[in-house]
Length: 115
Length: 113
Image (cartoon, rainbow over all chains, first blue to last red; front, top):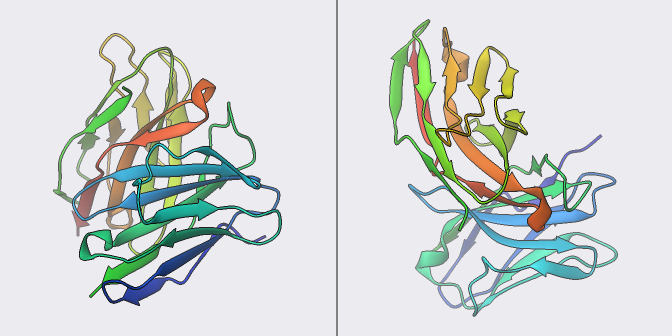
């Protein structure tokens, strides 16, 4: 009965490289959320996806960031041409419902470090 | 827009001390309110929640009451333990707007023996 699984746990990239973060939601969950946690800041919402659809991406930077949640496989958060300011902990959460759901289950996060 | 303001940390307490972490919110309508806890190296876990005014959420000795008149949801525990050392996040959710959660900045709690 695995929870939300994120990998890798730690990711190191040099400036200009691409970062791909993966998230497998809990079994039976079709709603996925990505959050970013910067040092000394709270969790900032980035994007909310359902299977094959982006529902709300109001928290995503307009450039270099993209997210997908394909019909098969994990959700992917992709950051192109990373910069030092992208260094943060990225958390994925899932829920079994969309609107009206009141409980998110979080993964352990991916710590991205950009050198 | 909707937002959550949390008491800044870090907070250091001796074991068995009384804990209060303040949280106030700004929201339209009637949000649900939550406290999440993050232990070192882990993701967030739901600690407790309240879905309407005057509701009290409780779990593991922690309590928080949804106060609409003061737009607050302060977290309290009467006697903290070393194992309570973690980061605590206050959050709100407007279920009717796509289930987006808004989190506070988190309050780090360290309990010393």
